[in-house]
Image (cartoon, helix red, strand yellow):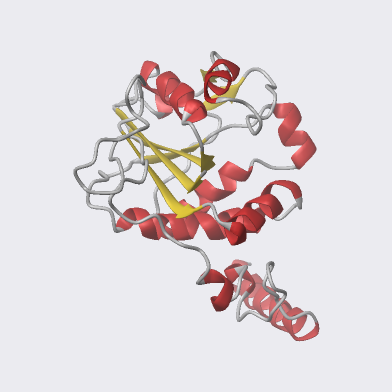
Amino acid sequence: MTVFLDPLRTAGRTALDLVYPPCCVLCRGRISHDRMVICDDCRSGLLPIDAPYCERCGQPLDAPVASCPACPGRTFYFDGALSGFQFNRPLQDLIHQLKYRNRPGIGRFLGSLLAKRVEGEPGFPHITAVVPVPLHPLRKRERGYNQSAHIARGISDATGIPVLENVLVRNRNTPTQTSLSPDARMSNVEGVFEAGRVEAVRDATVSLVDDIFTTGATMNSCARVLLKAGAKRVFALTIARA
């Protein structure tokens, strides 16, 4: 049956594209394929975070040997962190649409871009599983999906690394982190996450995935739970760093 359905789906998309050509979600210009989400001009506005940066927390540094201003006094449970792109206006708009305008496809697109960034980083080890940071069920029901899960699927599309959902569970619907201080962010996510499918991460090298890395409080809380569940190592991957 699939042999017949795939050509039909392709023909259907082609016909639909003739009537409603896929458009860039930022500038509304025409794009060649709906999976691209944005046009080449807008894509050039997504600026990568290039080395040097702290291999532990991902903080951009002024020089390769500079000490990291974000690490002193902090205990990180993840082994390393990488954020793909600068949190500039084009990326802010994309993440806003992903989270609040019912555009999950943007997550998958950004995840594929993040995967390409990770593949070019020699400091990152072989990842055996991708785990999205979970939403509370109430927040997920309101939004309709977990944006981090779609980012994780984009990484999986590009790399073949499996996505493990429901490995982490969010047990409290905490206030948004956006307006909180660094100390308040850490308190806000303390004890919020717990392990679900423990056997899925035992002895695995896991990549946590989220949209934005700010203080690392959410990633840290998740990483701690995964290590207690038996994960061998945990790394943090995000689209942007704010």
